[in-house]
Length: 126
Image (cartoon, rainbow, N blue to C red; front, side, top):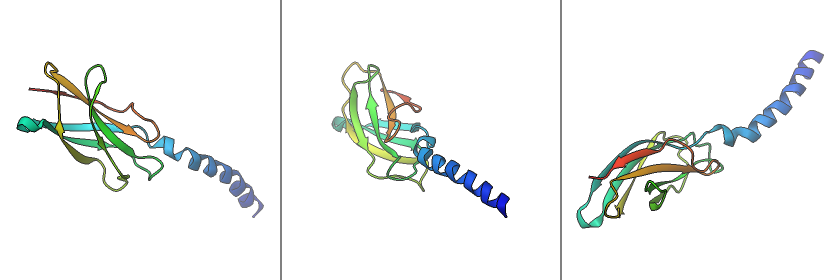
């Protein structure tokens, strides 16, 4: 019985420490798929699939962006809530204006703990 109490007392601090680091363990948000097409004069529409191990409101993928090579942000799709039970997930954004002369854009995701840093996908503008 005494051995059980000692083991339980030793494990409790470890469990508390792991609970504190849970948001960090979810990793960064990755863009895993991009589809895009021109919608006439209205600009471009992007369908972007993001993967992130959302753990709830404290750590989730909270947006993705269309950027140029020099990281100028052309458009942002805000993700208003966690997607714990929907991974990966796809969201769309229309009306993206891409400046003349830009031949390639990049799609990057952002999460509420790590910021940027996950997989970025290029998209060739034709």
